[in-house]
Image 1: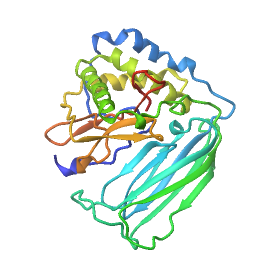
Image 2: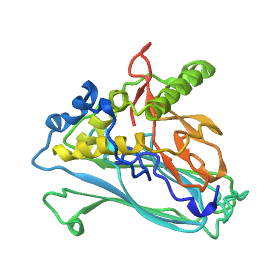
Image 3: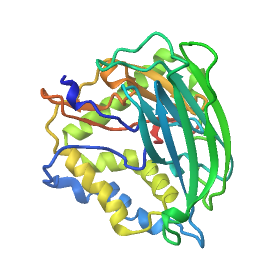
Image 4: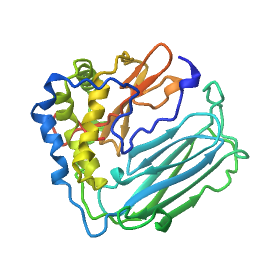
Length: 315
């Protein structure tokens, strides 16, 4: 792998996948049942008199970190240097009320992606704000701030520092999400790992076989919830997702399904396989990479909606 191709990756963002492929040849089974079902999701999406979108803005330096909203991982940074960015967080807001923010801070990495032993209290900073507004009614400059936090100066060096914060949000929708999902952390770990690996391998085969219909079946609930959280009620909103699946299905980079560990999210109700490779730490293990280091990475988090049910894609 060539380090110059290493970039930040969002574990869970509004975009369902990222891809560098350019071939858009349409698979023969693109018109199948589940693809058509996804195509019509926009008809089911509700919009309201006011459609608030929440965005988290951050400015950090001297550290590595992972941000979770209500247990859903939305961003991670394991790279050298400072970072400033903004992330839409509606997909993590299941309903109105208190929302939980967890920030797991670890030592920064050097230019070779080696992690330092301790967090330097004299060279670390982390500031976040969250604002809210309706893109259809307001200009971004008029969005109002709903939360602000500046991390206090650390008193000593440490190997890990965890922040647990809360803010209030009011959204007009209510998603099923993972609120009532099974606590997977209480299940037999080895048996669960085999089940998760099997699901990931199914997805890999669907991409290899260019089976867009099977992908649409597996991703349907996630697409619906993300579209509702973003008020995506236009035909093109879901067509763009299908077009990305077609691009990804034509990607010729090989999958590198190795060097991963099983990780729980959402108070144990969600599970994913994430990379342990230092260059892609905590990236989804559903990844392709060519010899030049160009890669495509597909976020994939699973849950079990009810006891005894098979795993399903949730984010």
